[in-house]
Each structure stands twice: as structure tokens, then as C-alpha cells.
Image 1 (cartoon, rainbow, N blue to C red):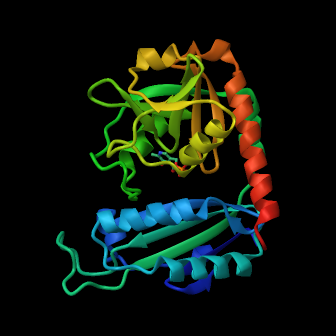
Image 2: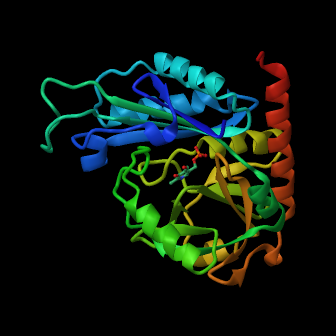
Image 3: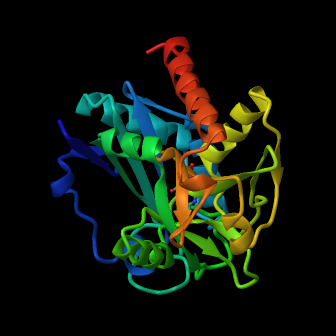
Length: 289
Ligand SMILES: Cc1ncc(COP(=O)(O)O)c(C=O)c1O
């Protein structure tokens, strides 16, 4: 099976899943989501993703939501699909109610969509080896980018403008000229032997992959610190990486056409990529199926 959906607890082919037009996710983007990477049918970094989902739901004042029960449905969907190497999308909206900005009163049940899909890592693996080009674009998003909401229009437009130029990603910078993150990945970099990244706060998504990489870096003796960088400073960094759930660690080799890291993946990228692969392999061996 290539994909399978579970809509409000009911398994179905993805193209048969339907949502009412009064759904607040459809009307207002009143919804949150998560994307998990599946290895051998198991959710990688599950606790980090579920923790972030809980925080997103709470930040948007959703009615209490049982994430343990959600994960039971997630694993039921994975098992029914038979998919081992995949991605799993979870999308929860505030539910269905006639259009009015204020929350429905009394609250209505949330709409919950789970989609599991086969994931072919080969194209991204090639990019991890070669490195990628990025452009920089103004960060036009709202001021709560720490919430993983489905309001992604500014991300969509910036990424589209990058793709038009044949680039992999758009690295975003705020009104103050400081780098925040990329449209669907975190940005971290190396300067003077230290790993650095934008400090966590409301301006960036707390990336699950970034969290793991900071731990891996510590284990292999590379110190990390939060740092605020302008675009010219980023361009002068020793190495720059995009990191994310399916991206993993993607070395950046050009920014706005100017070479970074001598135009090829650098040594810290290689060490972190190796540490990442080892962490996945150890987790797969250690965790019972
Ligand atoms: C804006 C943004 N930043 C960072 C990330 C990386 O987060 P994660 O490592 O949890 O996939 C994502 C992933 O979708 C994202 O959309």
C-alpha cells in the first residue's frame, strides 16, 4: 500500500477522505499538524513530536485532546498500511461549525486526520551528499512561529520563489535583518568550531531534528550556542545546514548564488550526518518492534 488515511478514527483510502466545508481548518486554518518520519513502521522522535503537538494545541486553546489515544490510532493506521519507510502526517482542526471567527460555543469535536505514506529517501540522500542551494527571503509570517499551525501561506510563497530559481529552500530573515529559519526546515551553522542557531522563542519552530542534532553535537564534542546572525554573517559562516524531519541534515553550498563552505559540504556536516545515522540505527536495534 502506498498510503492510507484515518479520518476521525476511520481507516480509508486517502482519496476517499472528505471534510465538511464548515471545517474551521478549511475556513480559517484553525488547525495544527505534525509530520513524523517512520523507520520500520515506528515513529522516530515520537516524544518530541507529541510534546510539540500538545504545546501547539494548548497554545491555540483547543479543548483538551488525548494525544495517547491519538498515538494508538496512529499505530493502528501504520499497521493497517503495512508501510515501514514512510512519513506520517497528523492534522487536527478545531472542528466543524458554521463560519464565525469566535470559537464554537459549546465546543465541537475536533477533526482528526492521519495520513501515512511511503517515503523514498533516495533523492534527498543524494542532496545530503552534494549539498544544496538556497535563497534568502523576508520572513512574512505571524509572530507565533513556535506553534505548528497549518497557516503556511508565507512559507508557501517563499519556497515557491526559491524553487523558481532552482533552489532547495528559502532561508528567512526578520524585519531586524536577523535569520530566523527556513520555510520547512531549521537553519543551523558553524562558526569558529561552534555550532550555532537562532535562539528558541516565538520567532521559530522548535525543531525536533534541531533538538536531536544539538544532543548529537554535544556527544561528539561540538559545542552549541544560540546566536543571532544577519544574512551577510550567515553567508560568511564556515558551514550552514538545513535540518528537518525528512531533510535530516542538508549541507547548504550556496546562498543567493554565493558559495558557502567553499561550495561543498564541510567536515562538521559529515560528522553530524554520520552521528544521525548511528542514532537511528541504535534506536531501531534498541526499541522492541
Ligand atoms: C518552519 C519550520 N521550521 C523547522 C522545521 C523542522 O522541524 P522538524 O525538525 O521537527 O521537522 C519545520 C518542519 O516542518 C518547519 O516547518
